[in-house]
Image 1 (cartoon, rainbow, N blue to C red):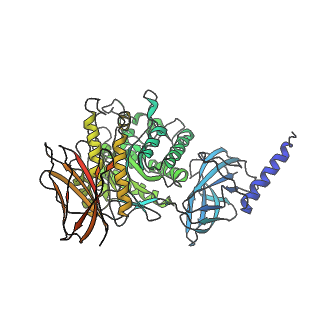
Image 2: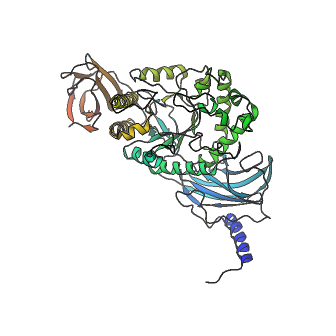
Amino acid sequence: MKIMPYYLCILMTIFTTTATAQSGIKSTESKQGNPVASANNQPADRSSPLTIVPSKQKVERYGYVFFDINSVSPYTNPYNPDDIRIDITFEDPNSNEVILPCFYISGNPSASRWQGRFTPRKTGRYSYQAKVFVKGAMEGKSDVFYLTVSDSNKDGFLHLNPKSYYFMQYDSGKPFRGIGENVCWNPRPEEDQTYKYEYMFSLLGANGCNFARVWMCPWNMPLEWTGSGLGRYSETAAARLDTIFSLAEQNGLYLMLTLDFHGVFKSVKDPWGGGDYWTTNPYNIVNGGPCSNPSAFFSNPAAKNIYKKRLRYIIARWGYNPHLGVIEFFNEVDHTYNDGDANVPASDIVSWHNEMSTYLKSIDPFEHLVSTSAGYKTIPGLWNVSNLDFSQTHPYGTTDNIYDTITSHITSYNKPYVTGEFAYSWENAGTDGNHPAYRRELHMGMWRGMFSPTPILPMTWWWESFAGHKDWDVFNATSTFGNQMTFDGGGFLVPLSVNAGTGMETMALKNSNRMFVWLRNNTSSTLSSSTLTIPSLQNGNYEVKYYDTWLGTYSTPTLISVTTGVLQSQIPSLTADKDIACRILKVSP
């Protein structure tokens, strides 16, 4: 085999790189599961400050395309957009400008590799041009190229549903309702390694779930906790998150990505002997950061500027993926408010969230949902921040009052509410002896949530414990009915008035031609002769199917004729605390 001389290889590479970008003819497909892989990773010619190579010239709407960019512009820190930044400016088919931030991959100031990741949301022809800025001034730009976007049956990104608190909706307009749990981190090295994302996501997907909450924190995908210095990001952590999004996509899961947790501001250990990360926090002045105390993180201009750069990197690297469902700033930020050594003023927390959510939405071309969370304390004014799309708290203990919690938040703040965490207890995952109590509360919380006006069913904590006890049947039975309700509901549900007699807890919803009912025996004895009564109906025939909420199976349907506007159905016998659901369909005039 003959070897081409080195100088000829270099010349051919430079010619191919420039010609490919300028012609827009030759495409290079990135390998699935490795979004930074490219057929052309050579440095650009010094005579051209930028070359850009798309992974494809034609893409379906809500499909994604990666742009490999080679730059010869100088920098000191490629993660600092005040030092150097590269954007791709698109003009969409309606002549609207879309600016896509790009991110650094590798290289040095004389030859560096960058990437832009884009998901078009409109059909037609886009034009695009890469631009490089050094110290805030544009140093160079590529030629203008074109991308053709065809229609597809993909659904796109998640957004609020302006007509319903029960659902979110995709770009496509289809309804979405989240069913899943927290899977906040991989097991730590000293723990059982079974319950990694690879294992948990596959089982969640296999059991009909579509949502999970994932943390970035000092021990799980820590972008800035690796000793590289504040404002420089861990490629290892970033690559792991690339993999997690790939796993989410493979298993049909949408993620709530939590960017920080309250323990990064604490110096006192939590009840589990950890959570005191302020001493190692890169924002701490003793570690070279700008903050003399935790409170300064929320008010110091330099700290806020550094944090905004991290937000830009997150949008640049992962914003393209529709499976990034929600960006959550903090887990339980209320633990920094009037709380021991953190003691951050409420006004600073609220001002920070207002500034950061406004900035995040200003740079995000994909319009992701944005939130934060509180454990149990009210921070005055927090949920009034307009760019926080929904409120979120973590009520532990009995779920008897979860409907009231949800509706009171909606009434108070006029936005959706999500139960980001819940469980029988916050203190521990329980034992084999009391696991039935945890399992019961898991079941009850999800079913009560299903019949409450929330777009994501309550998400349990203690994911490893439930997985270890093989409680996947609870998720499966819940999702089978819940996903059917979403499909049948079509994005529209309203409360339905029903009666099931003394001792029966009832919750019910309806749309134009379907009704859904949840019934629970709230007594200490068996109820064997209860009747479900639904008034104010149109006359006609109705198919009634009862659903075993624990086994995930439907009964044989019965046909009931309504002639007086009132439907009555015999409820199957229910032992104490047993619950059952019902799906009712009008089948004829």
